[in-house]
Length: 125
Image (cartoon, rainbow, N blue to C red; front, side, top):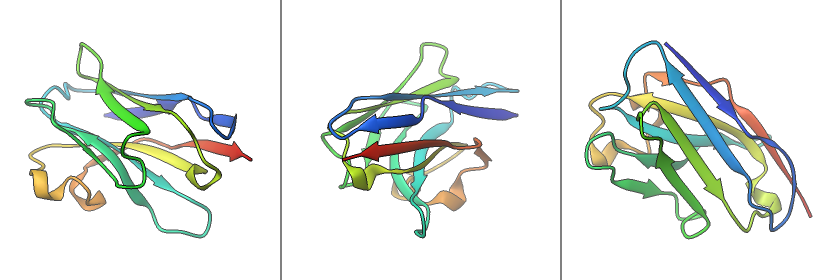
């Protein structure tokens, strides 16, 4: 099982990059897939998640209205569209997948069994 995240880089404040995460090794159709981020000197934090069944989405308050999480048609790909980026969004962004994740736990990193390697997003002011 492998998750690979793409799309990071240097972005100007206000920019709108899209991160992608491709999962392979088994089907992730029923899994919850999420994005977390870790800024320098800070702990990893929840960003967004999307359920496998039903497609419900969840967002951290800090990104609500600016970030959108979606899944590809094959359900093994997840995207994070970011707009209106701020310097405080600078972080390594990780995608993750978890099975049998209940809604009240989607923000908890420990419920995700599989993690990608992370992609760095640097927002310049």
